[in-house]
Image (cartoon, rainbow, N blue to C red; front, top):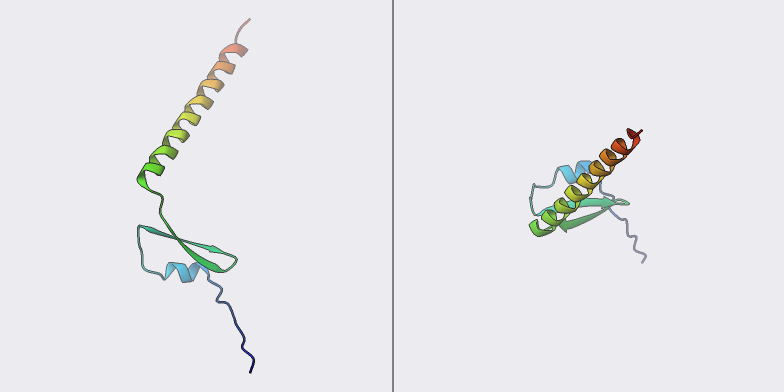
Length: 72
């Protein structure tokens, strides 16, 4: 007796039909469904600080180059 194993290939529509849960994020990789926890609020805060610092640095670098280009 032979057994066939057919994998279920998940789609975006399948995930959209799942109940909403703010603590679980669903991802599909090659048709396979993965359920992962949402990042902790401390992680979100740290990433926000990194983003803000990076943005401010880019703005200050841009402004510095702008000022240096205006020198006689």
